[in-house]
Length: 321
Image (cartoon, rainbow, N blue to C red; front, side):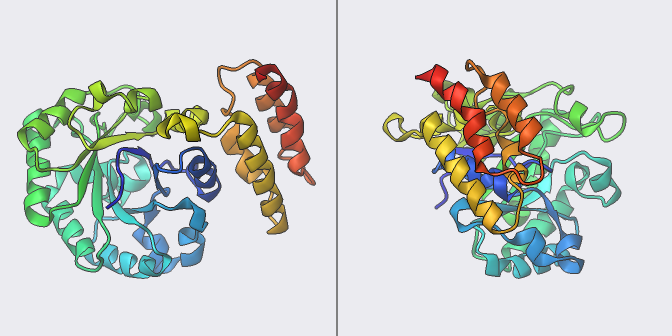
């Protein structure tokens, strides 16, 4: 059974394979998620480009975007040979792209369709199938409508877990960024749902960082917490997920990154594809600005090697010892 106590959210253009390898080193026990992959990309595009990953990323969940039960089932059948640990249906993204395809957060208005989608996904795999949703959309944001959505999907398909971003989404008038910040957080909706439906597996998401995600008083009787932007922007806090005796030091992380850069270079890849995800590594520490500036100016240059990582980190590590 997957450990859902702490997970890192799927984030487009952020949580690619390089990012996940970095996060995995920081938090060996965290559950990681891919960026959303649409059914169209798998049925008509380059499958390996979208699905390949490094085996070190396990446990790893594949998030799918789509609204056609048959296409979602076919996508899972394609993905089965890649040995993901979970499949997740995106019912929360508010971007114009997903709205035009009638999936993502727009599916909050169609709980029966979500139920059919999840049922179709579960019918073709033995892996867990989960749903990541909002608490509502537009003016349909009452607790009663949220609970009705969950109840309908549960009765039709019994997903293994509901991951709830505790904000509603405005499908018109707000950008995806604004939808992560403007609608108020309603953590009480998520906790009430768990209190009233204790048999459901529920993960909370939205607006908090790793320290709050690990606070038993905040989690209560939920199964865990999923952290998004804060896990990306303050990645070193992911080490808090692990027992203190086994946490990676900053020096350990820099050595790991340098080695991973060498591996990327051997594979014909640039080091910037990795290092762009690490700019927040030293946030809050003396020298953090130097780390960000040095990498931004040098890691994306042609011919950059792991020496850039060492040079960026050296003065910062010296101030931490």
